[in-house]
Image (tube, rainbow, N blue to C red; front, side, top):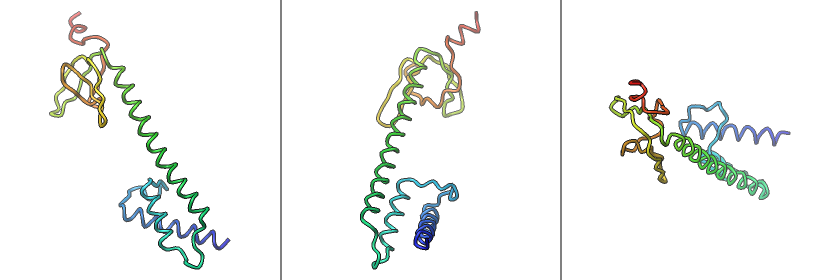
Length: 148
């Protein structure tokens, strides 16, 4: 029981040190990213007791967990980008009101969605805008609807 308690105390101390060094704001949340996990693993190896080295089975298990976390992060990023593309594509053919960087707004028709490795853009009247700049969507031209 004492060995488990010592391990938990060591993990808690290592986690707090890593959080402090990284300047994480949510220290009490218990969330660790893959970099923190790797740093924790390296700290365990660096400060292990030479008379009682880390068990190879435990080390391999930790490596597997690290790989699993990394792959889940990649999967989440791919799903998020897919959702963003799907959401942007629903705006094609519709009129949108976009908040521009200078604070003014622009109304135009979304002609297409442009997807690059880094970003997604809405082609509105020949200009690319990020989907996050859209704050209103119309099914028809709001100028024509106001006249009719």
